[in-house]
Image (cartoon, rainbow, N blue to C red; front, side):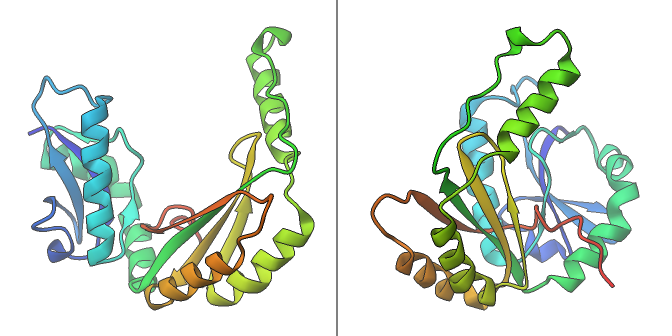
Length: 212
């Protein structure tokens, strides 16, 4: 067996029949079995996995596993996941009815990306990349409107800068509030502000949060 792993789930029937279910202790992994010769970076495969991921999150909340995790057997999958199983189980049980939504907002002024040729050290270059991303800002009035409209619908939220051109707001929200969030997103539209609201997504940004 060779399979691309998609996510971690509480129950087998959260996975089947949309994907192959691999039992790992008291949890299940969703996976797509592929031929040994199949390149993991193949675009058609990436699209197929993305479609399966979207279908799976419609069925039940799961924890997304970064693309590129390939298991060669059930035992291999268990060995690679064993250390994470208690944490995953806790997160999944606490967030059974929750999903993530994402708002990506274009920066008011994009920061120039550092040129690798200007640095003699890889570490210095990475620090410059990080600084450029953190310097990105969005219109403060729009941010206030976003927070007033969306944060009351979320259990948790997190602003982050993923690149030099945009800022992202991740929301952890009950599944039944998705329509309200989409409606609130529509009300935020205005000339001169580019943003994209997307979801529902599996747990990813909030998958490592500690729970009390």
